Structures are given as structure tokens and as C-alpha cells.
Length: 531
Ligand SMILES: [Ca+2]
Ligand SMILES: [Ca+2]
Ligand SMILES: [Ca+2]
Ligand SMILES: [Ca+2]
Image (cartoon, rainbow, N blue to C red; front, side, top):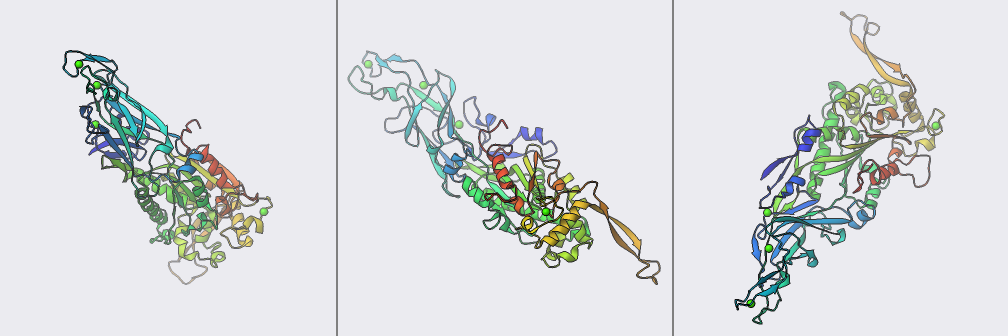
């Protein structure tokens, strides 16, 4: 096994360890090494060292096919018909092979040794794909030539469920033109020409699967049919997806430590789900769609897999396993508090905590502390998203009618149980920039203490300008500076995930994501390079 360093990664990501891919190195006589142009993967399948590779042979009349190359695909791409109708899989796939010595001249030769030469045809090597003739090889005497054939994607055998291995056969009949030629003596057939095949490749394009990463508390509900129905969109598009949920809080109390244990622990959860899903689908690259805190967990995950690359298996090459490193193609965040939320500050400083006592917030208090403005801002600064990852950051404003309060329609489906509480948090985020913490002498409470005790006093600092928000996260915090594109929508902290099929007051952020994925900057679709 050879470790191939991906030079491009080194150029674009100089601060990270070089990504590596593992596959058997090229073996054979042609000057066209497959690994000079592409890396074997779940969409670039190679047969290089099978029993019919790298041998120079004439036709064998005891066989139907002289050469046979088996290309196995173990990648599960999703629902091919739906992917195709959404342009998420290429319409065609390409078969390529370097071939040696395809003689294009006819010849006179005494094949039956009776002193009279036969008129033999030029070399005709027939190519079959899964039993169907697709063409003949072309080339020249004593030279290597690259041959390519394009076929409709429907002819490619792909796994129909995760775990299936689909086989595709490329078969060759050597010198078919002289198989039935009548010789001067009356006998039939001459074995004149020989050919050698170094390797055969199959190549197609397909969308990367999706990880749906949930926010604070870890419930999968926000992605399922009762809520945003994001999984319904994935089903419609034919894309395999996995919800990344959890039911645990950080073990270390970040309110005390000042670190970000919940981003780390939930980021590790994203990583382990990604590794498992990659192994199920046999692919290494994902598109991420995150809600709220899930976007910050995603930042940890992206930084971590760049710093410490993780190899996963992505295919088979002559029955050897091909590996490549876990990677992210695109990221969407819905109302992620990239620069934190002043609501988390207020909860930690007991400014509005009593309001939240009625909802099960205490169990996840430590996770909330990671979302404080100073902590999240510093975390985002240290976990910026690399430029080559397409990053769409969506924020929302709950106050659709701009009356400075939250009514029942605006608060519908929101995590905050009442419009009164939602109005309080809405105003808090609108008006408060941050809290200043000062240690003040507590002589007022414990006058007898010597030396006098100090207690922290939290003073809100007014915003420079009012910050529109979804009742938990401001537009400013959601629309982070390192995003490729930012979009402001109308919605609360839950409806910011939704489509809007009924024409409600919300923008329908999910439809924006769909458009950006299919025809826009997220570039999920194949052959969509000009955006
Ligand atoms: Ca003869
Ligand atoms: Ca030949
Ligand atoms: Ca070879
Ligand atoms: Ca309003």
C-alpha cells in the first residue's frame, strides 16, 4: 500500500496536516498512471492488478471473452432516479483504459502455412460492458493509447441498499475481425493481433450525503416530519442522510471552567456519527446542515478532522480496500450563535434565569454557558471554516410586523413556551450587547466580615444599535463573517429551519437551502461549477 500525499490539500490548507489516501499504487506498463489524474474513490473505481491486467495476449478461441475486468462499487449513493431528476448524479459515467498495440493496419499473412497469404483485417478488439457491446478499442502499432467510453448512468450497476456490493464487468474480445476469416486452405480463423490493457476505470459524479446536526438539548425532533421535516426534503432529493442527535450534556461545567466542553463533546459526537455513516455508505465526504448550537459543534468537527485526519474506507480496487480521509464539502447553519447569545450571558448571570426554570434548562446549563457571547466569539475565531468549504449562514428575525414585541403567530412552534418570555429574550438581545462583570465588596451583606468579601456584579452594556433576532440568537451572531454567503430571514428559532409551503409569515429558509444546493453556491449538483 502506498500513501499518496494530496498536494492540493497542502497548498490550500497549509496549517493542517496533509490529507492522505490509501490505495494500491499503479502497477503496469502504460505511461498514463491513473493516480496522476485522480485518486481512487467511491466515484472513481479502478481495476489495475486483476489476472487479465498487464498481459499481452492474442485471442483464445476457448473463451467467449479474452479479458475480463471486474469493477466493484460498494458506495450507496441514494435513490438514483430521484438524484437524476434533481441533477444530483451525473447523467453519464465514463469507462477509461490505456491499451497497448491496437494495430490499425490490415495485413497479408500466411496464417495456415500453405504458401498463400491471407488478407487479414486490422485489429478489432470488441469492448463489452455488463454483457452489452459498447465499441472497439483504438490505438496504434507498438503504442499506448487511452480509450474512453461514455454511457448513460442507468447502465451502471450501483448498490441499491447500504452494504450491497455491485459488480460491473468490462470484457474484451481480441482480434474479433479475424475470428471467422476463411483462409486459403479453407479453414476458418486466424490469430493475428495481440493487445494489452494496463487498467480499467469507471468514473461518475454524485452528491455527498448529508448530516443533519441538531442544537441545544440534542433532540432529533427539529429535523423530523413533525417539525421542520428536513428529512422529507432529503427523501425527495434522493440523498442519504443521518440525523446527528444526542441526549447528554458536557461533563465539565463550562460556566466554571470558561472552556467549551459542550462544543468538544458534541463535536466528537458529530465525528463518531460521521465515521459510522461513512462506513455504512462507503464514502468520506459530507454536506452538513446544522441548527443553532449544532453549527458550533460542526466548527469543532471540521477543525478536528483537518488537524487529525481520519481514514475511512471508500471502495474496492481488485479486492483491496481503498481509503480516504473524512472531509466536508459544504456547511449550512440555521440561527447558529457563532458569536454567542446574550441570553446565555443573562442565564449564567441570573438576569433572566428564573424565567427559564419552568423548562428543563438546568440540565443543559453547562451547554448554555458555551453560548455566552465572549466564549462563543473566541471559539469561532479559533475554529474558522476553511475557504474551500461552501458555507451558508442563515439568521432570522422573529418580529415579522416590526412592532417591538413577539405575538402568538410570530412565536408559533418556537422553543420558548410563551410569547411573553419570547418578547423578554427578544428585547434582551435587541438591547443588550454584553455584560460587564465587576467584583464588588459585599460589605452591604456581610458587614462583619474582615477582610471584606467580594461578589461579582453583572451590568448590562447597551447595544450600539438594536439587534434583530429570532428570540434566542441575533441576526448578527447567526450571519458570521467567515461564511461564503449569509441570508437574513423572517422566523423564530424553530421556524428558521422550515420550508413555507402554506405562505405563512416565515421566509422558508429551507427552500433557500434547497435552491443554493441545487443551483447555487453550495454546489451539491454535479456539473455546477460556474456559480
Ligand atoms: Ca495461407
Ligand atoms: Ca496488436
Ligand atoms: Ca496494471
Ligand atoms: Ca411583532
